[in-house]
Amino acid sequence: MKNYSLRHDVMRLRVFSLFFIAYFISKVTGDLNYTDVLPRTNPMSTSAEADEESPNIIIILTDEHNIRTLSCYREYFENQGHNQEFWGEGNVVDTPNIDKIASAGAMFTNYYTVYPICTPSRASFFTGLYPTEKTGAYKNHKKLIFTMSTFANDLKKEKGYSTAYLGKWHLDGGKKPGVLSGNSENTKRKFGFGSNRYRYNRGHWKFMDMKEQKVKVFEFEEGQKNCDCKGGDEKHYTTDFLFDKSIQYMKNKKDSGNPFAVVLSIPDPHGPNIVRKPYNDIYRSMHFSLPYSMRRMAKRKPAGPTWAEDMWSIIVDVSMKQSKKDLDAIEHSELYQSDMNQYYGMVKCIDDNVGKMRRFLKKNNIYDNTIIVFTSDHGDLLGEHGRKNKGLAYRTSAGIPFLMSYPNKIRKGKIITTPYTTVDFAPSILNMVGITTDETKFDGIDFTEELLNNNLVTKNEDQIRFIRGKNWIGAITQRFKLVISSTDVPWMFDMQNDHVELMNNFETEEFADVRERLLDALYKEIIEDDFKFNEMNRFFIYWSMPKCLDSRNAIPGNEEYLCTDIGTGTELGGLPDAFCLNGAIKKHCSVSCENCCEDSEGKMLHRRELLGCSELKDYCDEYRVPEFCPVTCGLC
Image (spheres, rainbow, N blue to C red):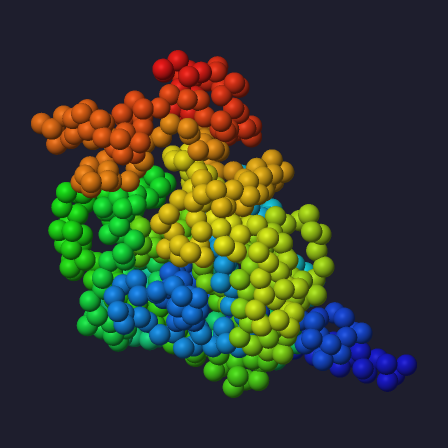
């Protein structure tokens, strides 16, 4: 009995010591929650079993990252026969440290964000749910509903993980920067992350600093004045600062007896496009060309979809009559050249910090038991299709990098070409660490079986995943992408033979079976999972191609003009009606030349119903219905 009491006294003393040490560290650094240091309460598990079941997890989440600026992806696409010199010959940024995550593990070549905008993308990644009203974060600057559960909640509850989130969050509404906890942490909206000291809501602050034990953020010029952040200060530039703080967190945690899970959310390479020295000078000598898809779309050879024309369009004011002159002016502008060389610099800075983190893991003998994920919330078109930034269905907007390493578990150099999206991450990471969840809890699917099998290259050509934007919705396979929108006809891209996504193959007879399979799958997702875009209930949307339709491409033989120029008169810079006497033009511009008057044979989507012309006769005053059903609506 006496020996038993003595052992108990020793155990109580050890527990008290752990509490005291953790409490002291949390007060000094703010990096630990005292409950995080308690050992996991599973006396039946050995440490070896615990390591096997509960590897550490590091998720590096960048912001607005063009997939072509990572050399592992660039080389992969080039090996598939797709030219990747989008901004000029030799104009590349090498990313050897990020590439090592791919070579040590797996690279997903068809990974997409379910919604290529910050807030909804992040909501889907952390919850495994589509970003609809049920999550609250269905568009930018909306709050994730307080009751939502993230994968961090499950990691903490089921496996005793110590969890931390550092960097941009963008799930607390419009607050900017939002809570940056100083002496106390944001305790109300943690979403499973025990340490949030260096988490802020939104903004792309270039420098971070500690002022009187409080975390401060600064714009670039402000930072150099107010935080002793010189242009080349590698301790305060936000990318460096956040990587260093995450490494410090891991250093404090590595011997705690608990596995750690860290989300490191870097605000770069999102604009403003400016980076610290020496990265701001590395790529200044390069002259960046315009992507050829921008030049082709400006000339309407071919024209792009109307859902690609919005406030971020670079070519909105480019004249077809002098497109070369206008485009050359854009290419040689200081703004375009600076945006590109600074973007490259931001990517290079991120890569160097990834190298620093990997060296820390190896030096401290925790690399082999650590899952590393490198990904982004969405892409940046960087001029492709005449567009900047995000929000569209194109590969470099909705497509994101997704790399994952886990030594001795994931085969080195593995390539996964099967399509997946951000909703698939939460169920997969939980399964990888042995947490069983109810499949109905997620909209996503589990990719671990494919990830962990021993095949070097894996693909599932039949798998379909779903993405959406403000005014469009899409279905993706390994090769094809279908896009339905409220502003245009349906589009279908053949990404194998048209890597840049210029041509609409919706009516290509060879792909008719694929088109119908994608349409059926997309409609099922709309009905069963309420998968929709914001404007879907307001409009009547082309689910099929209208029978009577003007081409949006430049008129053959008159390539400075469009069908909409016919009938406007030469005095207004247009074309006379007589041009319609030309048979080729009459076919190209069947509506403008009054060469077609037939009801369409297909369907329009309204709310959750597919309606043919016989069911649309009472809706002829609605936008687009008369064009789809001109006979039924009495237009001709």
